[in-house]
Image (cartoon, rainbow, N blue to C red; front, side):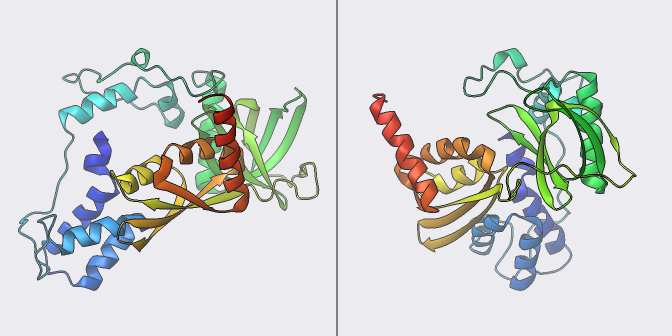
Length: 306
């Protein structure tokens, strides 16, 4: 919550609104445009009413602001301590040789202070130099949209050579692993980064490896739709809980929302567990298959006496 309180979409969006309001009064359409450009789609459900109704006393009814200077958000001591702690996470090196030189700040916590009990213990080797080099090259290829030639070990230990056009990197919190998704010819493909032996930019035309089955890896993207009752701050908790998934939220009544979350099919079990964690405040409406998974999970728990 440390950075979401100061540097989340809410605060960055309001900072953009204030930066504009300092120079001239904002019209309603301009306010909506700024919020729509800087915030997530569902954020407008909170930001616009809070500003226009002056619950956040930052914008007056005439579109002016009592703020005289453009907002600035320097790092607090708490944030510096947080960054010192994050720098101790081995995954930070995957994104570059970053250093946070705050000698006056002690780490807020250390890795040994955290006990995680709901994820697998065979995560990716984040401190391995080969893995780090492969990750950085894959990340660069995702950003710059160029193909890669990858040598990797299959699940059966066989050596495979593939040419893939990277699309995105995914992280499974439960598996503690990164996956690369991309295109091999006309087929979608997923590669666990921990299985990559070597990779390099590909310049020659590649022969594409097809996945087993007539449909290959198509249809990996799934969705779940549920109705949410906004009691005990359930909407805000749900949006934060599913923050790293693509999603949409729309209000259907004063305290009720329809939320759609898109996820990778390999994360389906994790998604079932996440949805169930909200108890009676969430009711899954579609697809029917996901409703069946929820019922089966509850039946399994009941048979175990949970």
